[in-house]
Amino acid sequence: MAINQRVQIGLTATLLLASATLTGISITAFPFYSSKTGNIEALVPITAALWVLFGLSLFTLRRVPVRAAIVLVVAGSIAISGAALLGPPNTSTDSARYAWDGIVQRAGISPYRYVPSDPALTELRTDWLFPAPVIGVDGQPECEGARIMSVEEPATGDLVCTAINRATVPTIYPPTSEIAFFGIRLFVSDDEQYWPMQLAGFLLSIATTLVLLRTLVKRGRDPRWAAAWGWCPLVATEAVTNSHIDALAAFLLVIAVVLAGSGRRWLAGIALGASIATKLIPAIATPALLRPRPWTVLIAAVGTFALLYVPYVIASGFGVLGYLPGYLTEEGYETGSRFILLSFLIPGVGATIVAAILIAATAAVVWWKSDPADPWLASLFVIGIVLLIVTPRYPWYALLLVPFIAMTGRWEWLLVPLALTERLLIPSVELARITVAIAIVIIIVISARRPGGIPLKRWGVEAWNSLSRRGVNVTER
Image 1 (cartoon, rainbow, N blue to C red):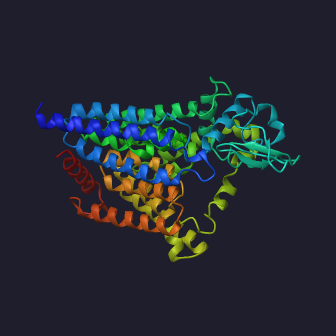
Image 2: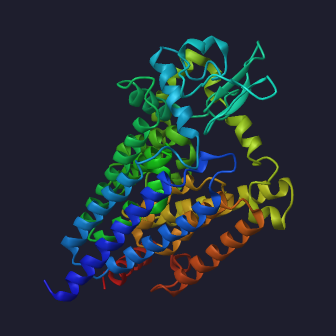
Image 3: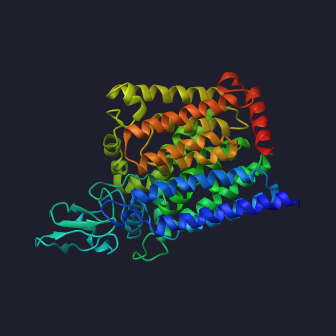
């Protein structure tokens, strides 16, 4: 092995070690929920540094020999995701709901039947999810502690302290998620806190890295690009530390696209249906998988989705909708306020209408032009464009996008999860608009400078295959 190659290996390994170390520090030394105001001032520069290290690691990896690169991809994924296990969730309380839904199901109760604060479930309450109120200086009971919120108990009006967000509304999660919550909680005590779900996120993260590596190699593409998922700060933070169930949705969607690309369309539809039944959002990738026989995938996906819901519908009826209608209203989808770019140009419900038109148009073009043998680029475009249109406040939604960046080598799309991360950490709509707009401009410019230009200009099956091949050659040099 040449000295230069050894230097590149050593440099990349050093950057990965720095990333893993800083990931652990960000979780243990600056917990976001350690105070009423959190640690935004510390998390912003640390997160920025993690993304810089990530970018440098990807850059130096290009000159590492393939075999050594594969070892680094796996080792780096394990090290960074492992460091993300060192502390409790730091920017989200969603995993408290995950744990509660699993605890409720283990007791033989549908998670859609009662809200967490309902007195009917008092016997299931654990101290870490429902700490007892304390008496304040004014002699009145109050809630204190990291992540703890105050709600009123239905019917009684008593004060309830809980780590569960939206504890007065039903769960929003679809059946694949609920099955996962149940399975994860099945073999651990109710007193175990966040680590079971974090461990599941760690395993999903590594499994996704391995699937991407195998698929890249099998398709003759550069396996180094699997690092775009395995080393990504978003994956460490949101799939592992905050253990968002979106990691499972992303894994199942990757499996669906692998199966679709190899012609196993019934199985692809089953995996797609299971992915959609995890978080609903993966439905946006459906158009990329519909050619050439759309009904095969659709029937399998819809059938799987419906089948997964059956036991919960039997137990709870229409209650399986949970808090979804209320959530859509709360998040501003009905009024259009959620769409930060469109709402700037088109105030009110008009933004929602335009967003729906743009999403429908994107889906139609992707379905029309997608390559059934290579659906990765189509999936990247439809997911990425929808995220840019919707601009959610939650960066973990972009976990669906990152695997397709890895499979296509379209590194410029990493600006989407980066922009969404900025929106979470710095709650300024004006800054978020600027960040997202800059991301869009850079994505367009970089795409236009790639061999063949922007794919939409010459987006036929033959042109797409040619463009994909040339894109891989560029990344390998």
